Image (tube, rainbow, N blue to C red; front, side, top):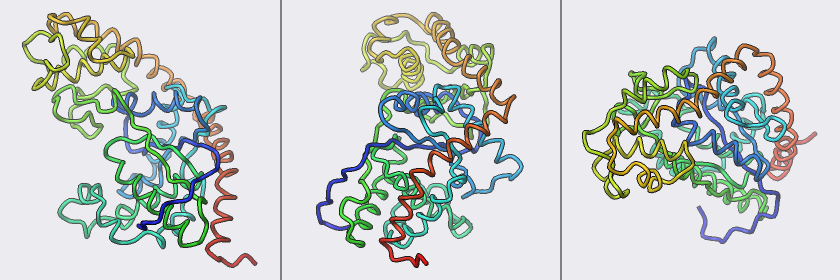
Length: 344
């Protein structure tokens, strides 16, 4: 990092984000990311990719990876992304991501990566058995963002450190190659309400596709009966709902269900409690089940329809990659010129 104040970036504003194709998406992914992608596409030029290059930092079955890419793309479309508005593509279909990542590997400092907490969490006690890609993937993530000169990135708490690394790499590149303001220093778009949805079986644990209990989450592909059943069986406590948000302290399951209702209804937690204060979960859960079914069931139906016609998904991904490369190719060409690569 340097102490020099960065020159301002004067280029267009762009939003970029992506999701790894590593398993079923669930309600937490929808509320924390996908629903917000659909809104952002109408505010600024938006690039949304399926992060299949990031996925292989840990072992993926090759035969399943392509199908998982299509499933994520189907989820994007089913939750409101319009391929005529946002560029939707597979990361690996735009080779400029990898090309820029190598240059950034030579800009980033080893000490910066040593501070990345996610590698420590994911590698555990046997980091020497982890892939080099798992260690360096924050650099690829920086390339994902800066190859489009994206100015805004939707992030959760677990990715803020990586966005800071992206800013450090951008600033160092601009300084090292005497290109003030060439890359922007991207800003985070915090996810806001609904960003952290907890397990239906344990209000202290984040809703996760890796949880062995399918009852812990609402999958995007669940049908109406499955959604309603999971809400009815969600863990609660015996007390009625309080009048204020402060009354949810020490009640993680109650807080989680109130938060889910608020996010699905487009309300605040306080507004939900004003409606249900004093009522028990016997009254609240049926209302939450009806709401969850009304919002989530159509998404599952649309995903199943889309996946029944993979050729349409492939067409959208191909078109999105072409549109993405229209931005990425000239950016990388200019980077190569700045770096001093031989051009023939």
